[in-house]
Image (cartoon, rainbow, N blue to C red):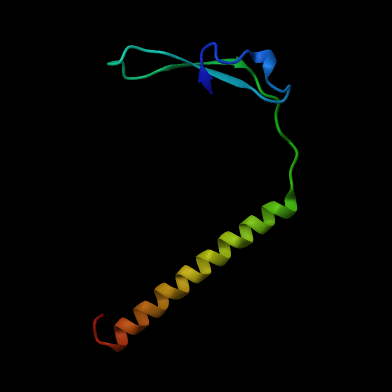
Length: 81
């Protein structure tokens, strides 16, 4: 995404698209975005990395839940709950 005229569509790799943003008056509420070049669809996947990313996220969730559960148990023992 670039301001209009900063890049030409033919300067981009074939697979990449290009969005151009038009300038608007300072008090305008929105900008105009135009598709200057459509991108090709990306179908290349790296399943091994996707699974590793998912496992990493699940691991972090598990850790944060363990801390939360331990904290609640401590509060109950101390009579704060």
